[in-house]
Length: 93
Length: 228
Ligand SMILES: [Zn+2]
Image (cartoon, rainbow over all chains, first blue to last red; front, side, top):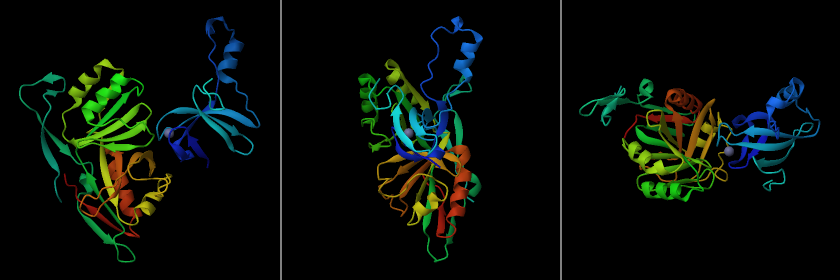
């Protein structure tokens, strides 16, 4: 069980959160210009990194805000937490 | 068995039809099935956990931009108090208890049967906002007694230690697989019940009450019939 630091509510149990997959996936600006392979890559393929992984979480049973977490997929240690629109260091990007 | 049925003389619009004169509708406590007082001392002979419902309050969900000064000023003038901006803060005016639910979302709990929705919606019309009446959809269970933290911890992942969950704070969390809002109550209501308000959806209130009664059996439980 993880203990996750919500950027608004503070430290809460994983029970209160839902996982939203890899973070910082940018939707292509003009999807109509992509071929099937490129569109499939955007839609379905993710990095499955070993090590520090940027992912989205939602405090779904709490304040219902989405935010980003850098989590080590080997140790499960949460390295940092930052609001959507911010960069991992915590500064607005 | 006490029937908690109360005539309400407020709605003039009923199922989309405009009807002359007030419509009498009935409010019913969601705990109607267990509306008999329970008093069962625990193994030590004491009552360690007390609870009762606070039904029929006015619950309003308010959403808006905290950076919009027009919205914030409007809220302050309607509620008599500024909306709290600190996460999980609770503030109170003479008529309203305002709980922080998110950076752009608050729960307003007012006296029973406040017919304020139309006025609120009109007042907030000029800002990008949402005002939703939840009065019929949720209720409040007030719990106390020296063992309340242990009883709630039986099915709640929130850190309930006074160091973490302080007076005038609220927290949305899960209790017994159900979404609840816990509000730390600092004032005694004069009946020996104080500690925490559990705001729960109406359809889950019976389940939550029964869970609490069961979880508190060891320390002793008292369930009072609702009063207004
Ligand atoms: Zn949160």
